[in-house]
Length: 216
Image 1: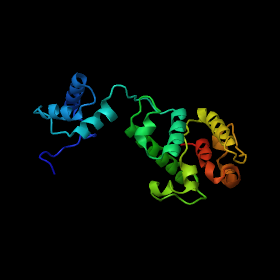
Image 2: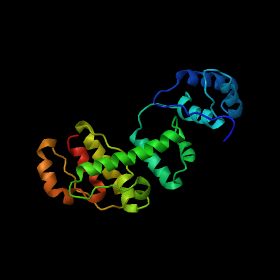
Image 3: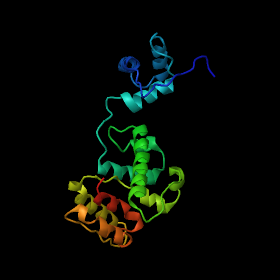
Image 4: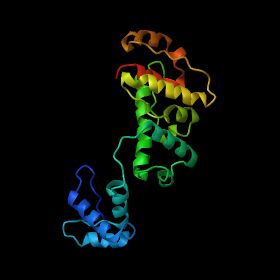
């Protein structure tokens, strides 16, 4: 261990003063010379030692003004899925295909997407087995990869028709068999019928269509 022990920025209690100091230093010296930036950070009495890597990560993943805080769009999620399939977990390379998304935020959103689909599957697919395996293990199995690595769908009833159409259009380009989809006028009137015919109407890979029809 070196002379200094680097303390992490605590996300739950963000030290705004440290962030402001880092922003000021980067403004004066640019976002390349992280060793020098780390030295300047340590000269401030109110700042605990931060390693060059910590300074860089904090700037690249959180403080860079070019980063966007906007919610992810369906198109962004589709692009993320395509690039992850092509490049694997090389998040820095994948980030080059996005504007305003850091490698860290891209990685976090990818796994957040999977966890969300696992929760929806376990909640709505009452006739199937619950998914309890680790995400890393699930992604190694094509069946689960194709099931879980999908864009998130809106939960609101007003948007579900469009979401279903988008999913069907995507699947049509993947040479998958046609899917019978029920589009009820009243969601509450379909729950009993969906339960009886769930296996026929919603094949295993398409559980999210069911979850979009049922109330949250």
